[in-house]
Image (cartoon, rainbow, N blue to C red):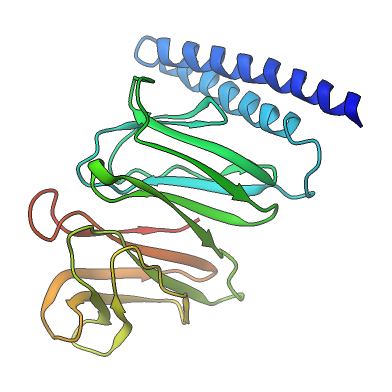
Length: 253
């Protein structure tokens, strides 16, 4: 077993080196040759995945799936490193990655201002379980940025849909989420809180965000389309006072 672990670590170092090399090539060709940029970036992701697998010799059969969203209203674009290797580059406000496959285990997540490795904005260890889905949300003002792990549940009974709500606006008070001119479906949601999912019949619906306990609408969400067999997370981001203003983005797998 000891020999297997040493060999795995050697393989991991080799794959991490190749992942970094392909990332450098991808960035070199980003504007010179978009086709080569895509080719090298896909190789970067493939070797990153191999490196993480090699560094975790004991794991469940199914990998975890992890996506990352930049939800800090005043933070600049960022680069995101997983176990010391850049996995995502130049992620801007409101941008969410696709799900990345990671074997079960504990990972070092470091977030830097894009193009630098001088001082981290966030440095945190995150543990993920095989077969589960996660969203890692970078939230709060840039001066107090934090990484919030969220367990996702994308599985929906056939023909149904479901939605939940996350409050990531750092200066907004608690809110109610309601059907337009109708009843509240998520009451008194405060900053950093993520509600449970509610299961619904697929529909297109007008929603509104109200100051908690009142009829004062602070944000309208018209024509929210909820398709069958899909799980959604509606996220309030931005600032109640100042710019960028309060808005909502809706994520689905």
